[in-house]
Image (cartoon, rainbow, N blue to C red; front, side):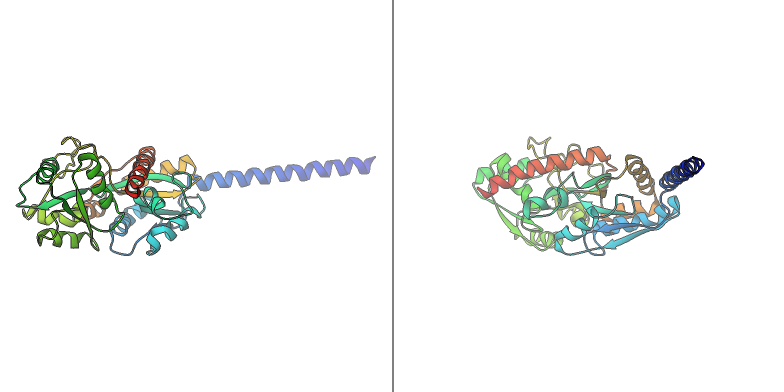
Amino acid sequence: MRFKNLMYVSFLGIMMLFIVACGNEGASGSEDASEYPTDDVHIITPFGAGGTMDLAAHALTKEFENITGQSLVVENMPGGAGVPPTMELIKADPDGYTLAVLPSGQLSLRPLLQEVDYTFPDDFTTIVGIGDFQMHPVVAGDAPYDTMAEMVEYFNDSGEEIRVGTPGVNTFSHLFAEQLHQETGVNYRHLPFEGGKKVVSAILGGHVEMGVINVSDVYQQVQDGELKILGFPSAERFENFPDVPTLKEQGIDIVGGPTFGVYGPAGMPEELVSQLKDIFLEAMESDDFNQFADNNNILITKTEPDTMQEQIVTNQENLTELIEVMEE
């Protein structure tokens, strides 16, 4: 009987040690989470060095380290239309140590153009929106129209088609031209180029009547009067171009365009997401980041995670319908 009692006491002792150990492990895990980050944080950019997202990520690194005491390590992963680095993100642990700066088109448009092994929003955590590329229609400075509505009327009256230059087939710019056709009935001929700068050259050379490109590609020419912006597909006028009306103001119902922001893999704890959002928002107030925004004419949005998700889901629904019409 004494032997059985001794065995019972020993068993209780072992169980108590096990419970204490588990409790300590949980406390340690909780403490680690509250002290995040305790190591370098890696942030993936899906394109090469020198691009907008690479520059944005690097512009955040100094202030990120000042705020957290840890390095923000930028990892460029070009190639594969951005799909391989996006897969690298979603396969990572949701612990906040692997993030990515992604363009919204990687999540909304890319899955409509090719088969990918990810879906939005299921495989991602939205953290904070960084900026808007300010995609817009632009024409020569001496063109006989000053707004998109005036250009549509001009070409509809003449019965001619608009030669539209874009940075490539099935880009946001290309799809904008198709949206314009569906909304207004104006006909167009799509001429794809390798990048926005070549579109600018085509406009100035008289090879196309209109280009659909980002502000960063044309800012200086607009300032010099060589080019002019006909409108923005945005909900409100942009602060850096207050005199340029939105397309909505002109009676053309096209709203939305490419943006970019910080994302993580699915399953990140809400507390960690909130903490990271606050860190990046503070970093976006730094001199380095604001210099980046000024140099590249990027509209800084600081979009909330829920709004980011809603915008991308809505955008994908609209793009799905648009592509279906184009394929008919």
